[in-house]
Length: 163
View 1 (cartoon, rainbow, N blue to C red):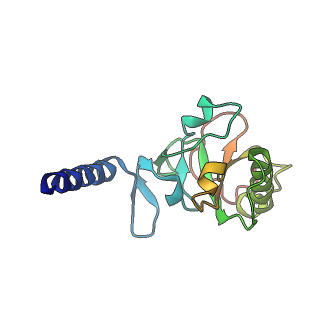
View 2: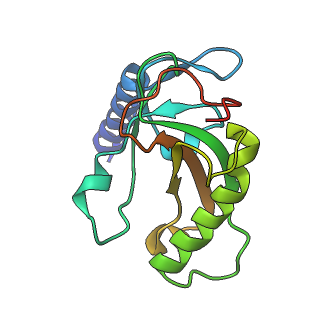
């Protein structure tokens, strides 16, 4: 029994060390200053990251995103987080319903960050939102990120650019 406990502790410690070594680093203000992997639940407004690989895996399903490649916004990146909030709805209707509600809520917050309405902008919205499975585990978080519709990577923040 003691051997199993020690093995479990070693495995947990190893996982913690791996996460520390490969994880994105933040400065005292919370700004990402070194690229690395980041848990989606750790995203903050102003964080920049590349598209999760899971987006390409399941075009007809809502993928579960477990890790994101985060980096300082001064480096080329696909997306910038502009809002993080919890959905204030009683039940999970469907994947399509959750997408629509999350996207609408992100769209309402778009112009405050970018400085121009969504309809007038050259940017689009990526919404990370609960899946039916994560909803059952009390996940209510929505992350709104902006990306260039041209497909080009962003460099620097788009906050207040009115583009």
